[in-house]
Amino acid sequence: MFCSFSKPRCFLIRAVLKRSMKGALLIANALFALVVGETCDSRHEELVLSLNKRLLRSTEGQNSLPDPSVHIALRLSPHHNLIAESKYLNLLKSTLHDEIESSLNKGEHVIGQLALYILALRASCHDVNTLSLTVNQSQERLLTQLKWQLEEEKAHISTKQHPATSYYQYSLGILALCVSRVKVNPHVTKKLLHAVDRGLINQGKTPSTDAFAMVGLALQCLKDVGTPVQDEAQLDRALTAIKEKLLESQRTDGHLGNEFSTGLAVQALEALGSPVDDCSAPMKALRAEARKGSYGRSAVLSQILPALQRTTYLQLRGKECRKEDDSLVVEVEPTVGPTSILSTTVPVQVEVVRLGNVTTTFLIDVPFGSSLLDALMLLQDSQKGFTFEVESSRWGPVLRSVNGEQAQQSKRRYWHLSSEGTALSQGVKDYKIETAQKIAIRNTGY
Ligand code: B12
Image 1: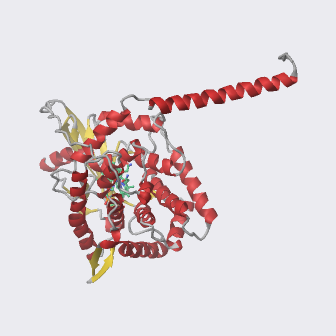
Image 2: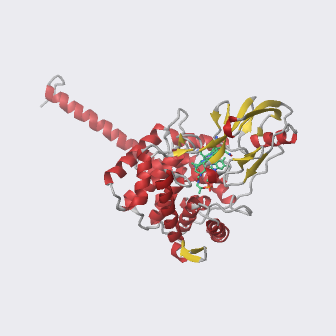
């Protein structure tokens, strides 16, 4: 009966024992993590709660346009302040609603805003069918308008080989219909699948992790509800390709794409069945960045919070809004003392590349830590022949015109920003100048 370890049968027994012990150890570890709620970071919950409160605070006394993605993030959270959320929803239903209606009447493409608005309503379990928009004197339900917008975009892709907006917004449109349980035209889906196949999911001219994430969320939603598509295998291929792109986009610091796309990428991976657990590198990177204070802007935070809470936009489909925790309180923001004015200045070279590659270079010394916007204002005031204009957006001011030259979105152009040849990952107001550098502002097509 004794098993001598030299016998082949006993080798087998030993191997099986070893493997099952390893398995048992893994299971025991997982159980332990579950029981003690291990997160690899004992202050994970505390951080998430403080970000949640900060996002809630951003909705108070605001006089700019309410942001539907802020509402979605607040509603996806397990902690709520139901009164504040309901006030914000009313603001969306008045101000944002009117804004979308007015843009549609001007013939502007606002598919992304309309989609986010519908997702925000869904996040509060509001019956989307009770709301309509009056466009060119005809009143139509929100979802009907969204379907039309998608049809227009589909036609635009057929004639111009790209949507009037972007595949990011096109996907948001598909996602909003899918989450609202409205059938998506298989031809609309087909255009998106083609774009994935042909490598057209870009921001500007470079592949975009954010866009891959949004496309992934939309396609996964279609897959989950079993929406009929023309080619099932093509859908599966696209989902696999997107998952790979998202995983490949991981940088050495753990971020997927960059600091600002990691939130959406984590959310998409979660939805695509490749969960990013609390101990993973992207989650650690998100927490580290949040602690550094990089996610101060509410538009940014609204894309980070769902990821840190391991929730996804796909959950809006089955959201019931019953028995919700109502414990979230807005805390008074700690007052920050006056920032010390540093006397050090840094030299900045600003290179403006206009249409036709006409290049002009300006030099200016700016106080250490100035934003690029401050630097451009100093340059403008210094009467060296530099002028500029910005337009406001949810993400802050967007540079629109330089020395009288416009880079219009309607013409698929923008002023691309880079420092020492590397594209900036923030806009003019958030990017801070701490070292001598050459900033290039180039009129670019996308
Ligand atoms: C598509 C896109 C663009 C397109 C927008 C045009 C179009 N027709 O769609 C183009 C190529 C023009 C663009 C430009 C830039 N973008 Co961009 N963009 C996006 C993307 C992928 C989707 C935006 C969107 O459609 N949202 C849905 C709609 C419904 O929401 P919206 O608020 O109406 O969207 C508008 C604004 O977001 C605005 N916008 C787009 N990008 C940026 C960037 C900044 C700084 C600002 C203020 C506004 C802005 O254009 C959108 C369409 O009108 C986001 C990704 C994301 N995670 O959100 C990045 C994103 C917003 N962009 C980003 C950046 C950094 C830029 C640039 C600064 C890049 C550069 N180095 O030049 C420039 C802006 C330069 C300037 N002139 O001020 C960052 C912002 C990060 C941050 N902390 O501020 C993001 C998050 C991407 C990333 N992960 O790095 N972008």
